[in-house]
Length: 75
Image 1: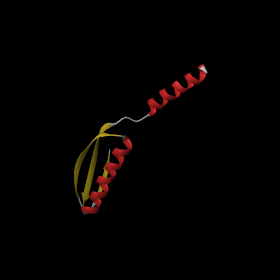
Image 2: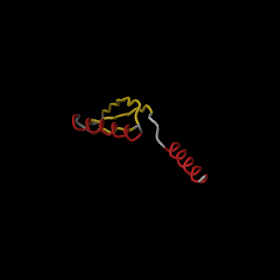
Image 3: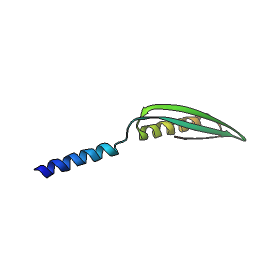
Image 4: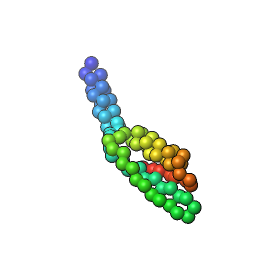
């Protein structure tokens, strides 16, 4: 019984250690049109890493759908 409690506590501590926390991120997008390039940044506040990556990918998709040339974005 006592060892079960210890294992449960250790499992919960391990889970808490590996859980991602919300942070602020900056998504940097660079658009290249011919020989010219522009860089734009977007703040992504209080987000989990996977959500920030998805949001940044959405910025890239939107830019590529509306602007000529190619846009790449990354955190």
